[in-house]
Length: 238
Image: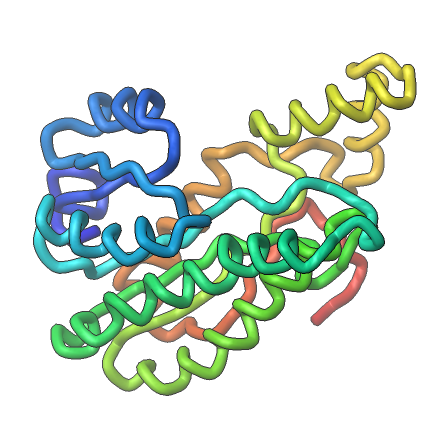
């Protein structure tokens, strides 16, 4: 992404994901300064090509937001070597690779914002999410040191740790759980909301606003930090 004005906060933005149709729909809403590049972060060759395609579409990359879905829920006994390698590729190796490919340009231009979407499970690991928690914690540790190397060039690296947000992924997981337990989905959703001090799920708009702030010029003194957004679910103070 490049900083500027026609889009709120940006002059141009590249949207990337595995499903082209929803990306095109969003790009149409954003206008002609939005570009679409499909890529699968589980494929090393596509990760390598992504920054080049983004640069061809819009020029220099000043802001990078790394986000990828986590591995499927499974008991740790069922996580074999192939699954571990795939999880690490998607949730640790690919984000680091993308950072490596864009960060020197950010340093040269004396501006860069990198935000990595991880998970609340980095601070509060959950059963069945062992691979996701491990890979994302590894990403946090790896880039936490890098953040200190580039801070003097006005390049920041931070992490957003979402809890339960009202998304398709959350709804899908509740549908599977309700079917497995024989519990009504609405009842299950109410049970989950009761476990959140805020009493509700987060909204995509709230999440987007937090991410936009970390990408802004005003957040230049924040780096190497993990911002937990979970409605107060995590009981700790650090």
